[in-house]
Amino acid sequence: MRMLMTGAILAELDDLASEFDLLGDWEERYRYVIDLGRSLAPLSETERSDANKVRGCASQVWLVTEPGPGGVLGFRGDSDAHIVRGLIAILLRLYSGRRPDEILAFDARAAFDRLGLKAALSAQRSNGLFSMVERIRRDAEAARARA
Image 1 (cartoon, rainbow, N blue to C red):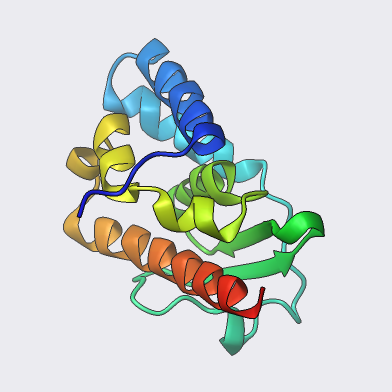
Image 2: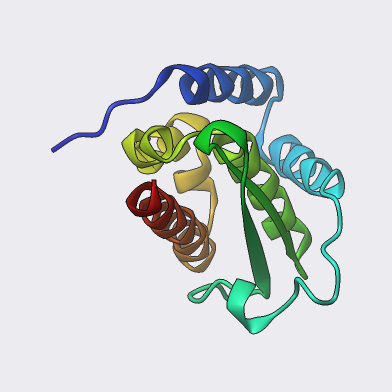
């Protein structure tokens, strides 16, 4: 079953796709992704815990999920690799501040195809990216079950 893209996430994806389209080649796009990662707020040492660590990533990756008002979920993250920090920033733009149903209805693979990330990333980076997406989806499923 194909998942549908939902309104707010789709609008953010449209914005990201427009930003990527303005950039020429993938060298420019990589620099942009790295710049996005520089905007991430750092996690505290406490938040860099085993419980927040994302399995399946070659780099060290931590994701923190925070329930917010109205059932929305906020996400924060960090990595020890510059490009991965940028990928986290993209994920946060797409997923943070959304309700669990919106998160679960979003087709991340189609989104990353649209941005050209799937073709531009190594297999190892792609696997890590989808490990992060799966972690976000599991947290959304858990939040939906609690609601």
